Image (cartoon, one colour):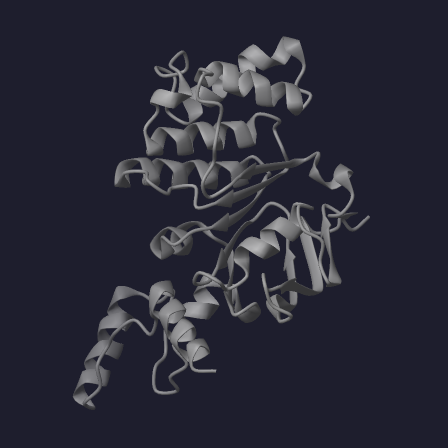
Length: 282
């Protein structure tokens, strides 16, 4: 039996009425995406590109104007679609008077984690996100980076199959960001699917299997990181799996004919900026 994708979006369109006007704004424009299970998928785009609206539709928080979205084979408009989903919003807000443990216990009860498992689950997650020494402190005293970490823990408390992470490293120092990136990779090893939105393009490039770049509600480009960053230059080639001796011979021959040897690729950031600028002119 073929399993449905983690997220299936078909011809999705969302229009909003502009406040105080008869005009309509198209936030998402005929978007189609398929995110396979057990993968890390990056959703990128400048502010106003439609990323947040797409996520809200996938989570059942906003109804589409046209098209459809399914989560693990269940229509996103059905509350049952959210049973196996963990979500970390871009700017999470938590009850400041609760401690980290109390917060996770609260979200655990909402996720129907059994009372026999909740203590073990909380201890495990606090250690996993690096807050084992801050679990008994009130969330109101947490730094921005600590709030992101406890937010990631609450997204994982129900052991969901799909994680939707919107800027999970916002406000986190470089060391912490690297630790969270490593954690995201570990989640895939555990069989989970991660939808990642981040402005840290180097992080996306290092952890994601596939990436979609949006602009003005439309899909501009989609594919593996390797396929997106490969330069389409007919005069450039890449040869892998050869011996050092053959590699040196090729480099010598190329240089004798006036050529240069370099990697025919570009960073994901270069591609992102190129597409964003092209889209601004349309």
